[in-house]
Image (cartoon, rainbow, N blue to C red):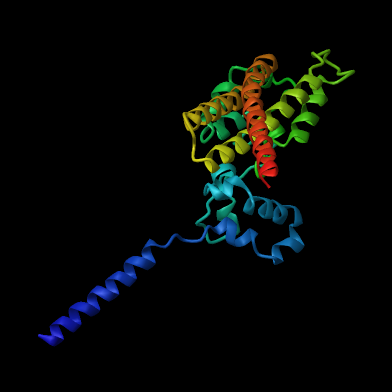
Length: 262
């Protein structure tokens, strides 16, 4: 009986080990190759891309090289791994500038739907000079909304002396993106403020509504209707600043009361 139990236990142990090993994900071939420091000496730019990817939202979401560039991450040779991978300037590439909305839209469908309604997309499909996804959102940027990147892109086409006589709206774009950044910061502060006070009254629902409106605006930005975006974000900013001012007055009043008591 003891031997039977021992054998049964051993079988279960071996089975659990086999199951555990088989459950472990195999390492991505793209990652294992490109992370090698020796790779830097021959391909410094590609190694730099890997370093950017490691610190990117794509890495955090489990999106790897082959998901956008193609190829086979499970391949055992360089030739197999890069089969089907094409330069971005090749019209057949999934990252060709006209195809980026389709490729990126596989994960970012909400933003893609807004972009498809924009004049920029119409110009892009007409093969005219127009921004595509990576114009404003470097694929591996930790903060793809970086204001400077967007502003440079805006001023290239909508700045003084542009060759196509396009509207001079770069200054308005700068103002709108500043407002979006300020609103994002105030939203974070407002959530922390109310949370630290135990979410009084209906504050939790109000903050949730403001956050929903803010993210709705961020998606609508991809239509590039600056006036509509500015009108919407100004309304949110007014509510957030009122909350900030109320909190400041309460703090000053309590500080004055504490000082009087002491």
